Image 1 (cartoon, helix red, strand yellow):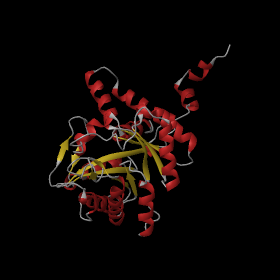
Image 2 (cartoon, rainbow, N blue to C red; image 1 turned 90 degrees about the vertical axis):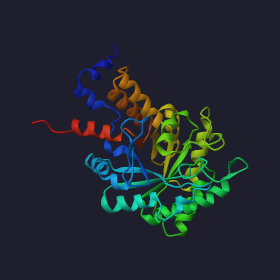
Image 3 (spheres, helix red, strand yellow; image 1 turned 180 degrees about the vertical axis):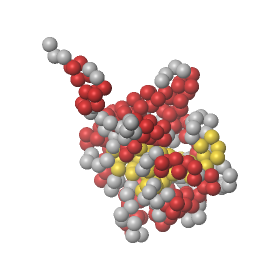
Image 4 (tube, rainbow, N blue to C red; image 1 turned 120 degrees about the horizontal axis):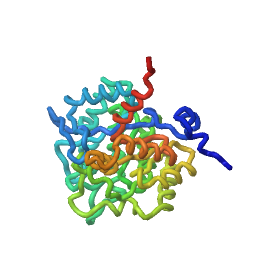
Length: 326
């Protein structure tokens, strides 16, 4: 008889044969930074997550550094919006201020910026609107302006999230032509038009005022299309390929891991976070165990990097579990 249970008999042997492990090195923590003064506002649909103005963010950044989380992904919420999102390439805009502040005061943190327009446009869509839809090529022109502004502010990596065709090629060319050829790009390579983004739109004030994003984000029914999208980003020069959302798209993460010789990231999005938090609050699940199991499933699927609102909780657990006993 084959007795596979022999290798499950104790925690000692389970640790020795464990195939995948979650560490703080895997984690990126999203941060919402709002233009203004004295802002520390909890996002009701995302318990434990807040929007901060720069004068209120030190405590959060201190905690991130103390927990040894290596990287943050910044989302900016401006005080003024317009129909094209011109604040995104304002060198004194909230994102640019945040980059400079964090790099000056927290130099150990690796700073990544979301490169998009939905938080900055009055209509909430991810680019320039023509004929009631996002104009792909007009939006690319503005993306180049935005990414150069982030680069000049000192960002470590840019992450374009709008799903415009030709995004990576446009950004790579813009960065190279302005001397930022060493600045890496994390592509939102396979991003679905998902209902799991709901709480994020509360967090970033980015809900569209008309229609939806299905003309540019992917159909959740499609798998092969994800490989085509990732192939374009790979060929255009993306340094990291990302799948978003994560938990309902583990098959896509594995497809990318099997196909491309690049680091694979995934985004454990706001709806995935909120569901765990809500069920745990009701006492229906063990929230900590479900959190850890969910993130481990993303690692098992092939993710090298996980962007998650759970990052601080996970890092705290891992830190406490690795402390030596007396």
